[in-house]
Length: 244
Image (cartoon, rainbow, N blue to C red; front, top):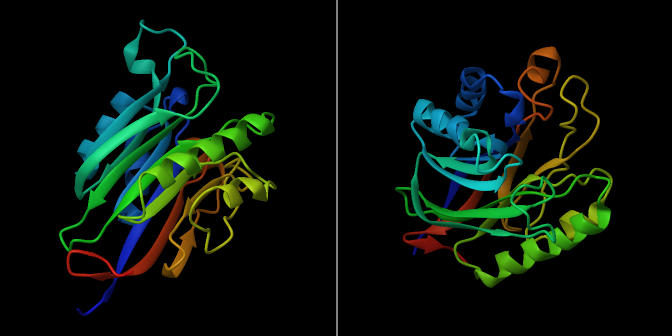
């Protein structure tokens, strides 16, 4: 059967939702990139819901932690995957030693299988690994992410995105399935970015890969302490599935 290279666009962004970021401005920034998949960290459920509604996207949000649980449920921190396409399945699982749902040290892996009308699709993974001062924990979490991804099988192809907190630590990306076809530009802090913390890992066979990150500055710093990363790529598909 004939194969065709189909382009996809993935955007990942740590929104620092506890700072009550301007959802309308975030929506405008995301819309400008016309992504197929949006992967968000540090986002509250109401924020994710508003973004999904404004962007015309389906939204899957999962709980990460909430210090005041069960009070003020709208303030719980979580992760979200948004897409204008069909979500076939979704789930999440803790990957940290810290398990208390009140603790910011609790880390999760979220995933969703997303299919487009042209029958191409990916299983997308969203993660936010431990901060830079917790190197052992971060390495252990990356290994658990890799184990979960591998347990799901090779089809559909995997895309792993999020805030890895790994600036200057190549072992994290080396541990995870997929590769970073282009080095990640600095994304933190947004007013003067010097740390490359946010990544999108793609299947090795991806081609025509391009990575876009805003230049940063005061206006971006008003939205979050991280800049969004947008990755465009193509992969060969056949009708009804991946071209192996």
